[in-house]
Image (tube, helix red, strand yellow):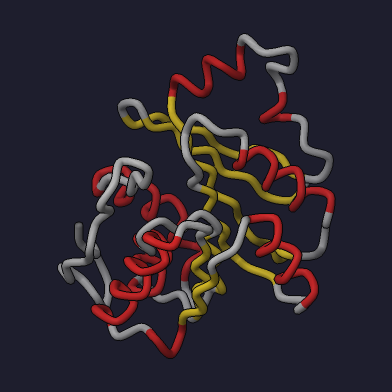
Amino acid sequence: MRIIAGKYKAKKIIGPKTENTRPTLDRVKEALFSIITPWILNANVLDLFSGTGNLGLEALSRGAKFAWLNDKDGESISIIAKNVKLTQAENCVKITRKDYTKCLAQIESLEMNFDVIFLDPPYDSFLGIHALEWISKEKGKILSPEGIIVYETDKSFMKKIESSKNPDILNSFEHLEKIDQRSYGNVILMLYKWR
């Protein structure tokens, strides 16, 4: 694994030791950051299901000013901390080991908000949808007024949604609207902003 562009360009970072963590592939990451470039410079970034810190550190490399990297898994937190040290990004990173709901509640209590929020949970889970629901209900909090949310999932999860009782769930958040959706092989990226 490596940082693709910016001040940490070509810096190798540590990948996951288990299959439970699935980092965003370089070609998907490159495509994603080309799309969200307008939101990155001087941004506050939240990587809620951080895994290795891959997306948050790429954002910092490309000009974000702060990244909050969260994961509930101890092994992931250890890798995140090592990757932050490898990139010497300690002064602009906060690392927390929390369930995503507790992390969002802490952010809300601190009255912080973010310009870019990455949601890259396990593909077969509804955690990303639940996080979008939480953020949507808290309009004006957590996501900045002009901010963007990136939700990453895969085609098999999308098929599960399409055959569920609520196939339109990814378009039915109270205050969030999907502004873009793109496929890269098996990976699907969806972008949301405030309505």
